[in-house]
Length: 43
Image 1 (cartoon, helix red, strand yellow):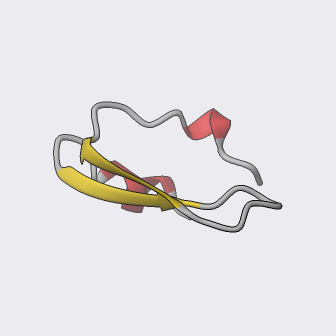
Image 2 (image 1 turned 120 degrees about the vertical axis):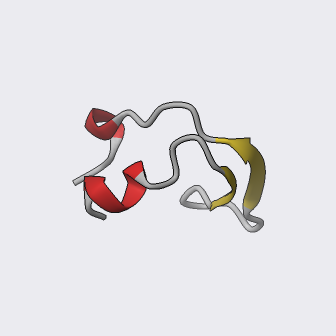
């Protein structure tokens, strides 16, 4: 994903859905995005 698209979420209320490899169910997190660590993304 482009950093510019993700930066649009900063300061907004968002729902983030994640699924770790090997897990059956996805995790859902809701809240206001304060900061994004662009170096933490897998490339």
